[in-house]
Image (cartoon, rainbow, N blue to C red):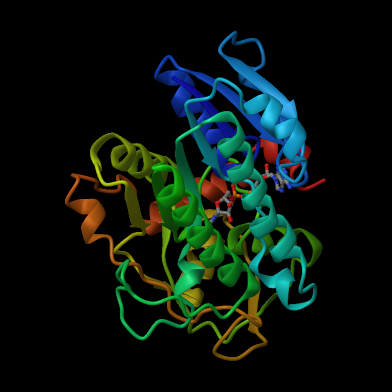
Length: 317
Ligand SMILES: NC(=O)c1ccc[n+]([C@@H]2O[C@H](COP(=O)([O-])OP(=O)(O)OC[C@H]3O[C@@H](n4cnc5c(N)ncnc54)[C@H](O)[C@@H]3O)[C@@H](O)[C@H]2O)c1
């Protein structure tokens, strides 16, 4: 098999690439390195089954050239910062929706018939059902979630036109090695700037869930191997739920940090945030998936990674 991973130099994409190479297949990483890093794929540069292409998914011509002979596209490239869409109303539209349409056109032109897509729990917005199942309607509260929902619809439309096989994964937040954005990163960055007071965005009560990246990748490949529908839609989420305050305490304890917490906000951390994220993972569990790490163990691993020499020398510079 020959795979192309858009965003393959990013946090999640680079782990997917490692998994593909472990299985003996070939992979092209197509990434513009806007938030991804060469560092995350550098251990694969000498592998003959690996190729890194620095390119933008919006460049359909270049992407189409690279897609020739590919069997399976894993489309991970996106603008993945939920908060920014409130200030810049076009960034998610261009990077996520137009970017995805460009990927679909390149697939159409080259005859690729399989795609996996990184969607998100944000498509459900402030869902009123918890845990939230896959058939819950789209109620996005962010342009990030809205464009991801639109991308899912575009992908399903191309699939119905051309008989493609589709895997749509709605991730909760992922944590672990190579994590570069999200609450754990933000907190450790703040602690570096102010060692006395840690200012936090919400009131500490929002409830969140996360999956360790290794468990998330395991879930994705389990679905790809075992789910036989034409359109396969799966939540990837954990049963463990923690409040923001519990998450912060776990980070502080894992990082051996002594600091005073100061909550500045209300029920939501920012415009577009969701104060209760808990995905129903029963469909995934029916395939035999079970996370190896608890939410708290995942946080500890992430803090360990962010305090490692690799992170200190690159991510926090
Ligand atoms: N990290 C999470 O918790 C999470 C949760 C839900 C969904 N997702 C989705 O999973 C995917 C991967 O997220 P991540 O956390 O690894 O983020 P990331 O920012 O680390 O990865 C995104 C990658 O895409 C690349 N990229 C961005 N725009 C591009 C473009 N126009 N052309 C080519 N490459 C481009 C970036 O350089 C980066 O390597 C994204 O689609 C994101 O929306 C992530």
